[in-house]
Image (cartoon, rainbow, N blue to C red; front, side):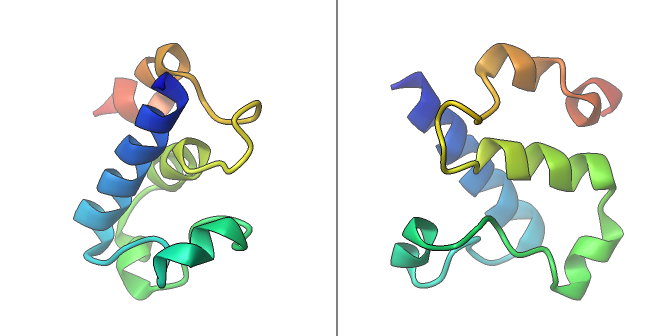
Length: 79
């Protein structure tokens, strides 16, 4: 369950900061390599921010950042 919560957190962060959903249509999350940060809005956010969101939205649960790792990520610590 906790791994799914991390994805939800990443989804919410992406949507709040980017102003749109990371995967559209929603089924794209099954095939996409990761979130797309090509929109110019992402140029206003740091690499640490994009890294944090990417790690939360990692499809492979074994590679996804844990809650403990998320709390100590440089973007969170530096905020």
